[in-house]
Image (cartoon, rainbow, N blue to C red):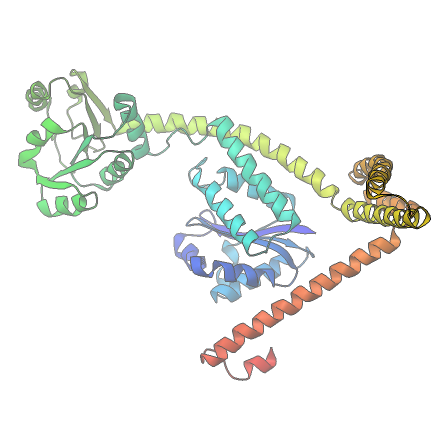
Length: 466
């Protein structure tokens, strides 16, 4: 059993390449099934976001796993591997496990510590579970990664400090107003940064947006996005009387608002706080505004300084999360070492259960006068004896299986308890199950191909070849 991840992300491929490897939401379940049917793949999960497309797989042969996963990319997206090989990364075993933990906790994201990816990995895993493309390995590993990421975010608070200028502006405003509910936003100019900032303000409860611009057309264009009111520069001071928040980002060569202009407006505002964000370079808002009563002025340098300090805090939190990942990897490795012991323990329990039932049958024949209550008491007590006899051997073999020569210990354990027949039965049952799955998969392929033939999307002889 090997764990592999193959994919491309924002570090290895530009968006022009990444967009070619996007799974349509409606086709993701079908892609999972096809990936599961790929040679050597035993379990699989597909994680697809705007910044990454990754195939996670449990495979039964390590040597060719990268070849088969590249083949899946090639076939599904109909792109020759020569066109994407240089953008593709393949991690195996410990490297693949560590990568999953780092992705889920936000350490591999474009914005370090972002929390959205956690939900995306969780959704990808739940879909894979529902499509039955995961098994004991990924059911354990992905649950562990998701749980650890939640704990990491809670314990370190890595996602709490905003690391974009627009988010930083919103957070500063919260210190002044507490909440943005029923607050009015005045945008001076119609720049991209202003739009992004007001989008965050709007999402946090600001309910009225006024866009003032030199040209009314551009003001109307931006105002429509927020059900806002467009206006022109000649009405700027009038709108300033009712605004709670001012975001300015124009291309003006000089100041758009001077201290003298705002001084007259402040008298009409009756001491209401005015939060002003100057994102323009050169500055739009007179620096002297910051000295005026009830005016809170921040420029691009103030915001960037806050962002930088928050980034530093996130990097400190990331170091703690890396330590958590190391610990989680050790725990997962310890768990995988005990996987081989499960069939042996099950064989021992099956054999003990068979012996117990045979003994009870014999007892009932020799003592036919026992009533139902007496039989129940005897069954319970004898079952308890069996369980107590098995408890210590099971604990010891779990410990021994995790040690250096665990395979040898398992073989010896099976011989001591004469479990060869039970293990052979398990193997036959597993082979039969896999055969049924393979036949069912082949039948699905034929049905899908038949539908394509009927629809004219495949040649008539394709079914015979299948």
